Image (cartoon, rainbow, N blue to C red; front, side, top):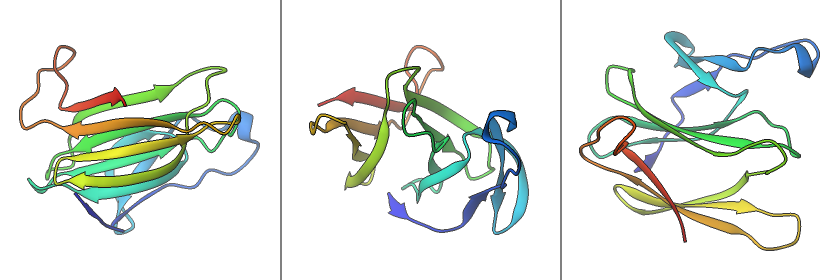
Length: 138
């Protein structure tokens, strides 16, 4: 995985509570036709096979959910996983690439203990049974 700066998310105006839950994904400022969950694109990487790993969230520090989305070269979603939920904050504070297909996602906690997850991209995947993005707590 190699960090890139090719993508962005559309910006939403108005009160936070009235914003849509998804944002349009832009590639070099042009619409891709993809909607991703969240308002903030935290990290973006090109993968070894030429696809893209995008990490998004809603920029809500108390009830944060982080999404990992794998796009193919054709900008089609190949896999998507999430961490977090209501009253279970998963605020991404770090992301360390370990190999071409694996990284450690670090989530800061309010009690000083970080949570770490191994995020792997599999070469093959079966939707719902064996997703291309694997996430395991370490």
